[in-house]
Image (cartoon, rainbow, N blue to C red; front, top):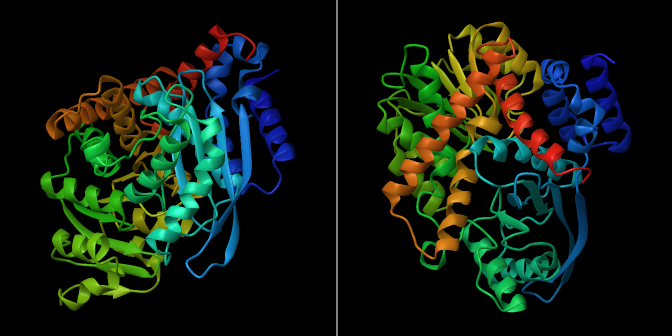
Length: 447
């Protein structure tokens, strides 16, 4: 059977077995559409059903999470953990607390995590978890009770050599602390079972900055390979969480000018360049809306339509907000305005149609599984520090992060070249990540 027929049959099976999970379908299609040349060259992957096994999680967990608010009212949320693939090591991937969470979102994120973790070169498999619980507006006591209830079920499925969750949207150091405390209480052991911990009790320096810093290191490598650099570039960034904030910080350190940031209410445009100290005060300390920025920066403008951020003329775009925020019309606007490079800071922020437009117009485009791998990379480094019981300096952790991101760029670039699509970093990332996982699955037999 021809490779395209094989991948299409696998995709149709995914649609049939996983109805209503649009994000998971999109993630699988994006990967399968690039693997034809690999299947042609390696028929053993067909004979052993590697693709069919890759798209089916090893384990899917769904559980109820009952908790009590400060007024004594009882609530029930739904918890998830998808342990997708352990061919390269224990499952590794974040926990997301957000009302949009359902099984399809967790499966999409877990599937992406397989190849992302593979690209880091670290010994970690792919997984993801979360709940439809919304921590916004909840007191610390309510969040603590929810996290304790969540971990009371999850603890039996995770461990430092089995599954090591991290944070994600809605799960920061506070939530990780409550989750870790409950795990320690139940299991009577202090282990590296979670990453994203506080620095004083097992966390890693650079973890907060890792995804944003890594994203910019990746973009810098891409630009340098094309005779350019970040210095002097105008950069449009969406989002205003950790990824966006620390991507802004690294862009500014490398001489670029960030001109936009956003949150769910709208976006700001500052032609003078974003004042990062003001943004950190608003978003990290006061936890207010990004529109507060314009009250102290008079030349800055605020717009309520988040999608309009991609109409702002820029040289580089770094979408760091959420999935599918950069669609076909936004991609066309960026191309029209002369954008030369896009790298994904969020998970799958560009639609398939948007990606195609970038590639057809020779815009340098790096997908999330390669571009935002810095976060899980430093999570892996945190695991190493926990095993050694030795904390690293900021400089050492950042140096290791930069090495990992540089190595990822080389591997995806080489894979794209080898399989006949030079400069196609989507295909390169999928191929490089897939081959490593597939070969490990072959070596381990029918598991």
